[in-house]
Every structure is written in structure tokens, then in C-alpha cells.
Length: 165
View: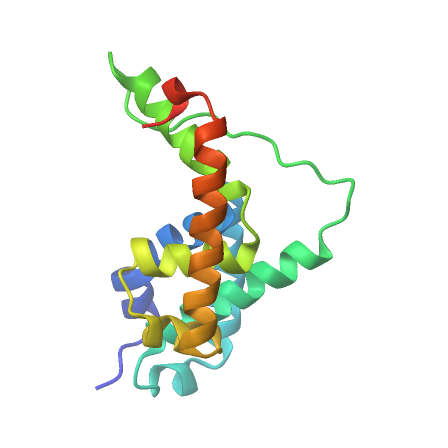
């Protein structure tokens, strides 16, 4: 039995939002991205729900929509840092610094490479599954991951060690 749109969003909406956050690096942009994709999926929900893996399909749409937004973004737009919604306490500063360092590292990567790393290390998908989500070959996934990790390895020694987690 296929879940209704509301049941699916209730059950998997948080996962889609977390994935979008990994893609965008900005909570507000991630929320907008998920809302946009879910609005498109709602119109065609019977077809989407009938797929063997509707969540994987929606993640692919999230990646594609994120790339589309990035291409359309004007050069005048400047992302504004959102206030930290994280935990308060004695280690909040260290936790915030670690998050900021991680986002700074991921922000240096092209969006496709960032998507590959998010799918591999955050979603724990195999190369074949990532290839299905991104619509490419497993070889492309491996090369994108290798390039992304090489970029990160080259950048890490140049960063302030205290800013790293």
C-alpha cells in the first residue's frame, strides 16, 4: 500500500531536510529547497509513491534542484550567516567552531562533489546507490569522491588547527 503524501512527509521529511542541509550548508535555504521539491512532488504524488524508492527519487530531485538554484543565483546575492540554533553550554563555542570549520571545508567543494560526499558519508549509500540518485555511473561517483577528498586533504594542512574538530 502506497503512503499518502502527508504520511510520507511526516515519516521522511526530516531526513530530506537534513540531506538538503548537507547540500546547501544553510538551514533556511535547505528548508526552501525541500519545500520546493515537495511542492513539485505533491502534484505528481501518485506517480512518485508508485516508485520502488520514492525517497531516493526525491533526493535526486533535491540534488538537481540545488544545482539549478546555484546556477540561477545572481552574483549580487550574498548568503547571510544564520544564528546558531545549536546547544548552549560550556562547549557550545567549541561545537560551533567545529561546525563552522566543517562547513568551510565543504563550502570549498563544487556542488556535485559535495553531493557525493553527503550521500556517501552522511546518507551511507554505496557508489551504485549514489550513481542512481545523481543519474551518473559508479565510476563518476568514485572520481568525484576522490577529487573532493583530495581537495579537502590539500586544504586541511593550511587551516588553523584550533578551528578543526
